[in-house]
Amino acid sequence: MAWCAAFCSWCFGQAGYKAPKTAWSPALFPPGRIVKAALPGMVMGLYFPSLRRIAHCGIVIGVKGEWCETVEGNTNVAGSREGDAVMRKLRHKRTIAKYADWL
Image (cartoon, rainbow, N blue to C red; front, side):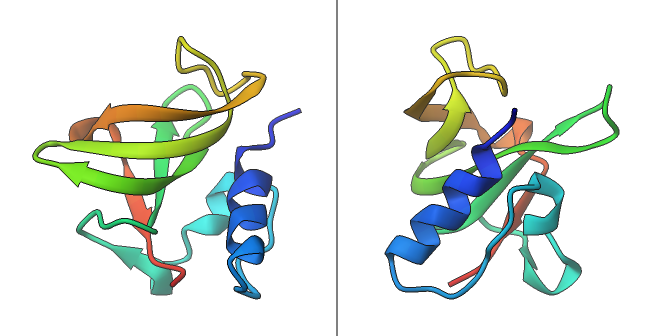
């Protein structure tokens, strides 16, 4: 069972935000929340062509040039979306399909 979106929602709840509250990663990217630039606190989404949708998400915690440092649930060292851990990851911006601002 995928839980990356539930992890993002839990993080926002722990920080005192009432939303988002979802376990489905595409729901984190409604049109009114989409932004072009990555900033700390933004939700990032990875598009999976085989599923034809955003299928993994995490929270941007830093931006360094063309790279985003993220914290992600349901991942592993290899970067799988079917992982077993919460991890910090370094992702190139070109691999990220969308950013959403829930702050």
